[in-house]
Length: 197
Image (tube, rainbow, N blue to C red):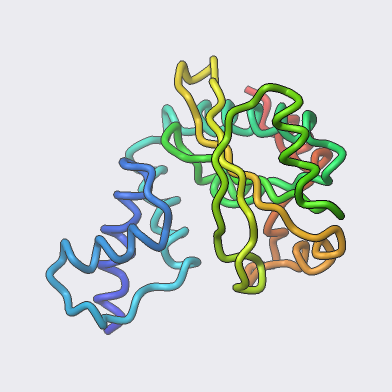
């Protein structure tokens, strides 16, 4: 059973890096591609992240650091634009496994969920709305937009998850590896300074 999980993780990691798939869909597609039963136990996200890091080190070591930096710089631009909503960067761009195909995920912590929407409208930003599973599994509003990344010469998806102001406390608890699962503006600036080319 462990071998199947490793095989799924390795196959899914390739899809995450080469196609920009999110972890959940990549795992499901890997099961299908490998011809395994649908009920096969899926690897956890920590194992998949390890496989993604290994894949990047093996196949993308020469390009990924610059791509990651470009995405973090673009994330910082949006965080500064939305500073009033206490933005925090999460997912692959924060954890360092993002490539040019990765989207940017920002969590906003504000009292009025409509205020972020109004801020986008005021800046003439086109966006779509939706709902995604939040920090505690319950649905949260998400505003999705596209932003030009000049460094990559591409348009990047930016997703703003809207949380209540007080949810920030639970959002900063360390993950299973003791890492902060997301970072605020100062943390992103620090990471960018530490990784200067």
